[in-house]
Amino acid sequence: MSSEEVTLTSTVAGFTAEGKLHTLSVWFILALRLMMGIAFFQSGIDKVLSGSFGAAGYLQNAPPANGSPVASVFVAMGNTPWFVDFVNVAVPWGEVFIGLGLLVGAFTRLAAFWGAFMMLLFYFGNWDIGHGYINGDFAYMLVFLAVAAFGAGRILGLDPYIEQYEVGGTPLVERYPWMRYLLG
Image (cartoon, rainbow, N blue to C red; front, side):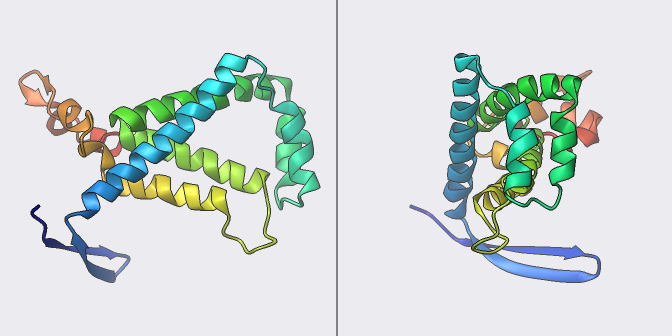
């Protein structure tokens, strides 16, 4: 088994962080991607197959009951019929597609972004700060962001093949550089 350390350096807003990443970390990054893929795919497919997912009761009742600082926003969403209809489709199918994207490593950054967004909403909807502001929903949000930041779709995934797909004789990400925000 071959391994080494790779130095990473990043500067944001004038602050530079530097660290060494062990090359074996690639397996842990892959594990995070697959773990979240399985979790979301399973959660979504269970909701889709049951055919009984409904968000109205949750939106109207759970956030106010747990003291969420944005409870009024959730209640307003729960009292808006077209929005509830949208959420009733978006949550189960969103979980399925996010999970699939992560499992096969395709459009990984896009999937991870939407996964992080969903976890942010769940964080505020499931508000529970009895043991501090960091709970499972918040931690999952950070895992999604790490999966995106590490370009986890390039690790035994389809993203490197999609990135190199030729459009007019030019690799996709060279022709459309903005695609790097969706892939990887």
